Length: 358
Image (cartoon, helix red, strand yellow):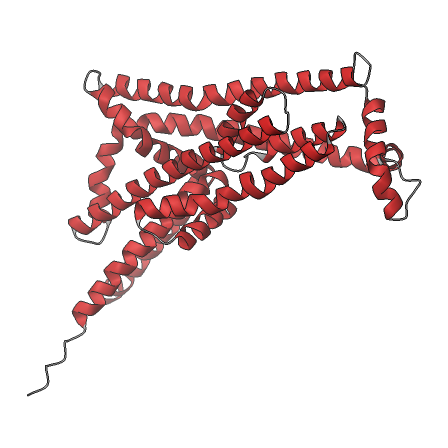
């Protein structure tokens, strides 16, 4: 009996640990994006927390840092949303006035679009095609598709708001109690303390490098877009420049949300070359500079190859959504650190060959 217990007790314990980890992972999975965002933001704003901590208690310092972070993130996005709404309304009114009316009707929009599409329809052998006629024919299917898209958009918006709320609540506790988790984490890592500390430091450096890369590239993209807005005669180019810069810093949003509608607006006003030029500059320079510059900027700061950074950024975004832009490079840093440790241990186990006798 003792032999049986001694043999199968480790198996039972291992099975219990595996089951517990599996169930725990299922419980945490819905909150993983929020937890990751909270961890990333906590690393970025920890210097602010330390400054507050010199004069305030841990609770008040964490509260002040959390609310300041909400202001730094939420206020620019709210301002950009307000500006976009006002500018879109003003642009629509301006377009309507250019057509000799005080209001912009749906029939007027369709008439103008049909006029632009007519030469293309003639070239492809469909002289009777009109956008309004096509919409009437496919109205039922379009209504169903629009309903599905609206439902998905509402669901995504709700999930995003929930993720933000959980992330900022978690941020408070990470700032206040994060230092208590450092020692247990170091003890669980099966490495020497120096090695474990080095990995944590490299992960923090990677987070800061990705943040700097996002900000710098957003400023460059916004500068190129702002110059294009000014040269092509877009109304209020300074406002659109600021809005583009802010949106370029938000993962999975970016400049196309602004330069594509502006290009179409210029074309609808009869400014064909200006609209086409703006669209070309936006697609070829503004949007592509993100994929080209960001890997080089991040790679230079953390001493990693730009192509490795490029694939880690894309892979992280495809696998985890917006938070993947941070998680991808962090995972890459961890993998490279672990492979260096494994290589060193393998070298220690391989006996050195004796030098040949002279």
